[in-house]
Length: 330
Length: 286
Image (cartoon, rainbow over all chains, first blue to last red; front, side, top):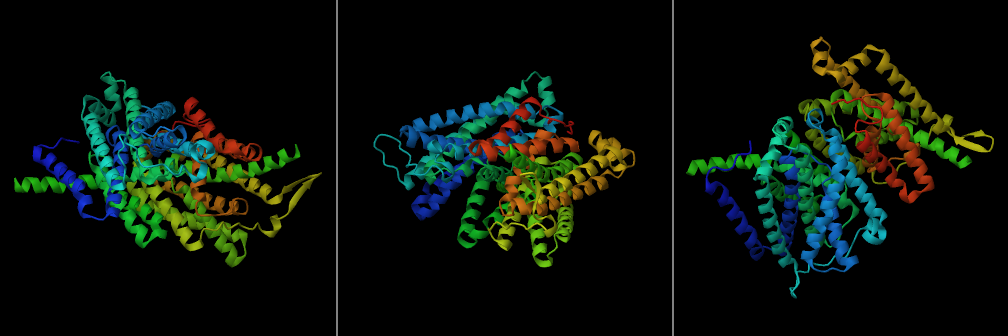
């Protein structure tokens, strides 16, 4: 199903083209476009992180914002309340905190994500993960001294890279780009490793994987923690991008964005969520200019259109066209 | 003590509204295998339709009937245009219905605005019922009565009728049921429409207590999910038990420990998931 591209051009050409375009974009275009692209990159990482468990392991989590939000809140709290200013230390600590949260929540979550009968119908798992996000967002509202309560944790400063490097929004663009590239490389290596193939095997037939001697629970549980860790990186980038984290960043509204990114992008291609985040942020921007009041209607319609008319996702469609182009010219 | 009794009554009436809502959700989920996350938004839509009818015709009873019929019709549309094509694809159903609930909430906001519209109970049911020094609002007693009636009806259908037998058989083994020549598709569609109608009834019944505002769908959807998981799916008595626990817990929590009230339902939910994933009274549907 998820075959590696045959020729080297097929894979490297788009990567290089996209990389060069993204790197040179801020030189030609006004800064608000760069800011949109920064947001696209953050959402791309957010979507990719969910795709690790959804697309590869076949675990559709409905509460992925929990990790995004915990990561973002952790970074904000470390800067504002604890007083650690270094971006790098905060990034690592936020990822560790989120991984711990994921490890705790994973225990009840995978109790209901059974093998066989349970695995074919993940309704209870969906319900459980929805509740995690809500529980954490209510926690963020209740722990006012730490999190700023329902108005959110405001005034998160620009990322401090140390060595007297002054952060601007133009430079933040490149920081996000670098972090995204590193994360994409790591995710790519993970999903194309022995471990990643085991996850795909579990997706296709968990019983058979068990028969082959795999501890499938452990694979699913660890993939959930890994996905949470990458989601936290997206959350940290987001916290420094907007300067504020609100309880909604942990809850359903934000989880739904991740869900849309994966399903619109396609669960069967690696780069799908990147394409989807470009579309999503673009549509959101246009809506914010022309029809700000109807945004939830448009947002909802994106879900419906995707499911009814693009069930495979944009990634698969683009791949099909691209393969035809490559084979046509070669 | 006296306030505890009044709070208990409030909690019970709230529990019965949750029951009506969750019963529809759980029936759809158990019988059709469909996860309808727009159930909360449709409940809210039903409340608005009911209020509109009340303001035009000044008749609460007609409003209940129209809200129920309108939601059944919407439910049929939902089934015909969307869910029919997504059989056995749970994540897809979830994504689709989440999208629909955003759309419904925004359309409601568009038509009726963001203000919380409180419903007015009909004159017959206004006022209070006095026992000594305690006074109970009659309307809340009425909700409990309606809830009990519907509970009894559903329970009877489930255990004593042919339709109930078909539903139970279908949940045990759908293919076998179909192979016996039973039109299970028809039965499950009708059950789905019944569930939607119940949501409409719950919506309009709830307006004098909960009001109606565009974001209420999300809040009630989450409570419904918790009720269904705590109670278990597949049995109407499980849904009732879940609704009682969550309704009473939420009401007493808000009355006595408002800061922590938000968490109680979720903690119960997590404990049930950990200890008894199939719910307190539930069959393994899937």
